[in-house]
Image (cartoon, rainbow, N blue to C red):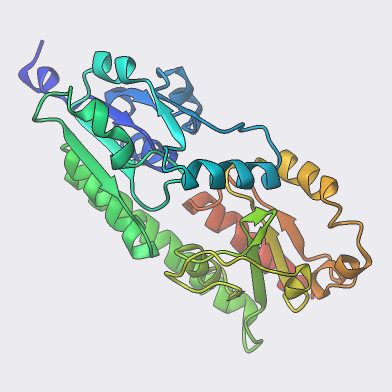
Length: 298
């Protein structure tokens, strides 16, 4: 066995976005475990699962919101960690996040198990607020895995892809004003988006309503706040397209006369996006193509 192989990092990824980054860096073979939410790329699903939610993941968005609020108010963690599995996996690098304690495991959740790990175990914590932060996280992870050059190349590729999308959007829009886009990331309560999602909308040629770059997601008190958007993108966090559609039917938004009179609805400019995969470069491309096609048809 080579010395490089003996000292190769053993990576436990507790964040789905981090798992995808590890794989895109060509380091999938370094993964020794994952969170319950890490299902992309599909090969990651063969890894041992180190976490589980303490709420019912199959509940409706309103029920999930209530369960999470109760759990958060009690001061307890949202996720359960299989400490025995983490220890037996012998990770030398653990990747987690501190952006949202509802979305994934945080460093605080790992305190108990980390005390039983070797002192040289690296805990990589990412907390992206902007798109630039997301790209910075790619570099942070690549450095931790010992492949900094791959991280640099991947970031350059993503930047080029975003630049191409932006130029394409400008070409399509021409002198037309930027269309107003509402991105909905939760359904009950209804919530807009912020952080890097706003920048994604801008790269695709749109102007975000009910959200700004680097800002927290906003609760929308009334559905009618979506009425002035030229486009509406429904992408509830963690929900598949099919689940989002069923949820929309259950809460009866689609049946209301108010909804049917919205500008985007009348114009057929409403889309449901996969809430598990929305904020990655492939989603930027999908959104761009949709906006381009819509602008051309208009």
